Picture 1 (cartoon, helix red, strand yellow):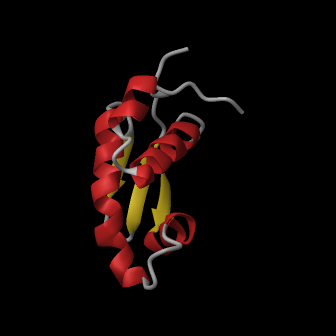
Picture 2 (cartoon, one colour; picture 1 turned 90 degrees about the vertical axis):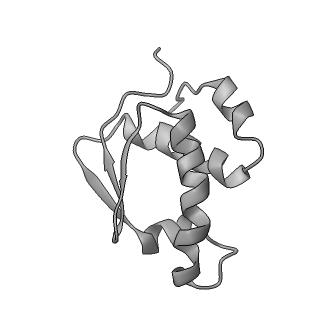
Length: 96
């Protein structure tokens, strides 16, 4: 399903391909969530960390690009927890 994204936000994230991936993933997921949804670090690592050999090394490498993506998607409701991310239903990054 198509999702509207902010082209300026994508341009702002061009220094980090992972931040772009996270932004697009959040744009696709958050507006369609029916309720709070936890995503474990293990699941995030499997989706975003193919170049990171160990799960324990993934989180530190993921959090920087995550914060970049969240700065570009200011209406995203995402909490970082010890167990992973807690995603909450959020408006899309660009109103239709």
